[in-house]
Image (cartoon, rainbow, N blue to C red; front, side, top):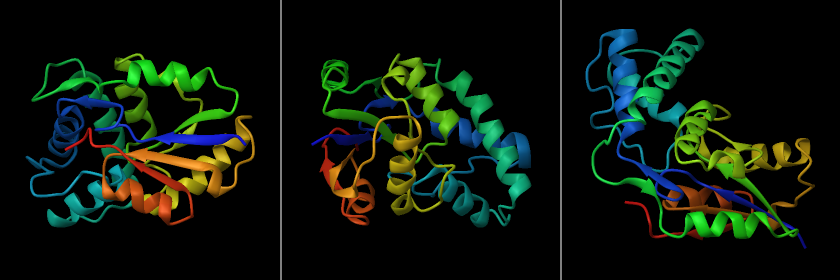
Length: 199
């Protein structure tokens, strides 16, 4: 029976040396004049949508549709610059990923997708930098829902729409490095696989 295997990005496929956080902080400064927007805001395992909501609420701003779009676009603009910098800590593809992805891609009983809290364009920028984007034809992203637990259905619908097949939730495997990855799989009866590569 075919499986849809959905990968998280940060801490599971790659580490970006903090490029995403730096880009979001720069977006906050550019759009609203706020410095260090994400200071004190938890990010691991959460969607960019809810991270942005919580950061702006802490700073006294409501995340309406217009502000959401402005912040998202600014984040992507700055991420294209930040991903090119050495960054802080590890910036690399996680061990084994370059071997694993082509192996899975070669199997006719496996379909690959993404399930990430990153906005879709941010996911493309990060994985494109490491030449990994083309392994994934579709997925669910942080622009789809604020709640990560809502993302598996989006990924299954996209897999169907892009011709990967029809999958029951029990035939979906979610691979990630945080308790939130496990929780979003459990929320719909998918199979969670927790990896110890993240923080």
